[in-house]
Image (cartoon, rainbow, N blue to C red; front, side, top):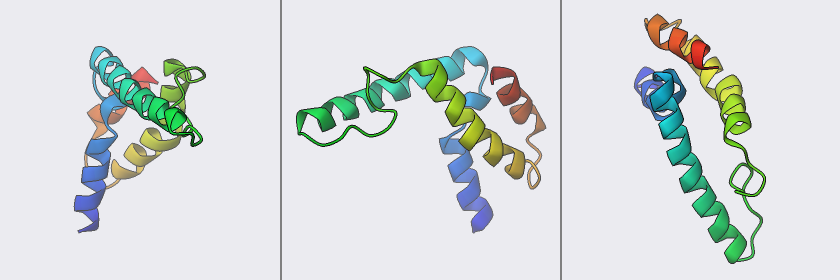
Length: 95
């Protein structure tokens, strides 16, 4: 069960492991969604979630932090269980 949950989570955050042109496209799609949520939060008077403020968040820095602190660590550990060397290599190239 743990391996299934880990695999689903890995799939959910895997856009930096795709070829660079696809990774950029999905990162932009995520940021559009996040910015819409941040706009809604601002409009209803609650604090804007970290990374969801279109006035302060930059694609490159937000993705770099996401790759370094979430995806890279997850996939390196996941790679010890499942053979995903090619995927990890693409992610490291995109970093």
